[in-house]
Length: 102
Image (cartoon, rainbow, N blue to C red; front, side):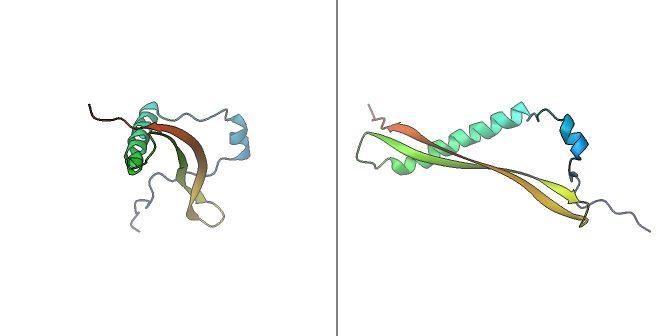
């Protein structure tokens, strides 16, 4: 019988209750977080260009961002890979002012 490579190489398993009781927190890779935040900042600036035509010079822009984090998990009951998803939605008003050409 030929042994095949697993289809998903980064599949995790659910944490057991005993393991979960020992976890204080998780840490995210700082470089990955910095990259994500920089891309987010660029996205904010790009999306704000839609509001350049606003008549008023001083306004608030309502923002909403949904963060979605997921990982593939092997469900031991069904023996299938499922996606475990966590979401957080953040809303905030950002003050906007036009910057005029000199």
